[in-house]
Length: 131
Image: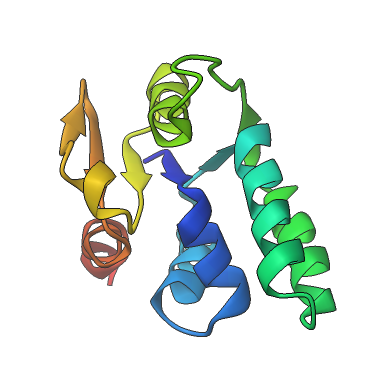
């Protein structure tokens, strides 16, 4: 399954130990392709530089892991909704899962064949069945 992490999932995986970090590692081990985009990178950089100044390694760690994901084309519309742009880009790239912690986006449920799920739901769909 192709998986796209929303910016907040990337940030949780990089900065905090826990489910998102484990999910990032487990996806690689299970061979599920991880998709990303330049918009995710720019949003993550802005947050890391603004909120986690003391975590200098976080930016370096993010860039290293982000570079391992397959970069897809961003969508320019709707210009005023970055979440909708990320979902549209993931859908256009053929992602099976869009993983986010954003309650508003989780409420969208599904876009075409792509499911929008929480990190815990992604774990259940991708990792638990493989065990």
